[in-house]
Image (tube, rainbow, N blue to C red):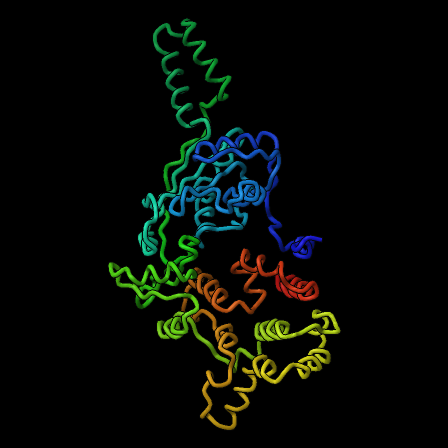
Length: 414
């Protein structure tokens, strides 16, 4: 049984990928070559909404094989079935929104073109290459350019030009023009009434996350721009850059959470939180991290209140205090308000109980949930929802019985 088997069986592991075989493989390869990549040797594989394939990524030993450097991502459309499908390894948090916009504007053309051709997509942010970490601030408008395999749009123009020539004077008896028309029709079919025009689309970018430079959050729709780095080396590099008036943090800096609260980006309410399912999930997952060689399956311990209490009491006092720290704090608060959260509540547990501020609009809420999940990954459901790849990487190493509990939790909430 593979590490991911439990997720696969529960339809929680890349379950919406589209199978590619036969002619479609040939078209996909032509797009890879057009974009400057090497073709795949695979005869069958699966793709997601943007045309990314886990099998090809494995074959090429490059997760981001559709990128020409971090500043130049690409996509491939070979079937209308890609419409509305997830983007499983987005390079930016707005990748799926871009694909939705493409299908919304050009749905009919995509249906027509993919009957016998493919569309290569170039997401151009007018940055040839990244040189410094704060180059990510240059993202403003993405120009989405389309290239048809075999230059089909240009072949259509050429075919229409030959037809016009054919209609002039006595050209209808010119055998050379006959041959030109026949050659074009044999190679590309009858292109006269095909809807092949795909002018570039502009996509505006506000706040976002990108995998460039080891992972960066750019928050610029708030009081002042904040840039959060996941990678320490790039964070240190960015601090030296004085060209931009932005606040720069590493994702694990204590000051970050305080700044996000000050800027009305996140909030918390422990009294409300402890009454939620989310708190129960977080507390149980926290508990699972402290169980040393339990005599019962972890799944049973987390599901059965009597077993749970029994194992909680078996924990060493420091671990028990951490697991129960929020409730202990609230109890003490009822007696006296002299207690500070930092004195009693485990810092990571406290971070995990934050949420995006209720005043934020939907697209920002999703981005901030992802940031919070990356700061304190303790809610297995939100972890799965907002950072699948990181969730999968961690899931592999968990106890088999903990995996069962996690799969159950996610399945019951989807």
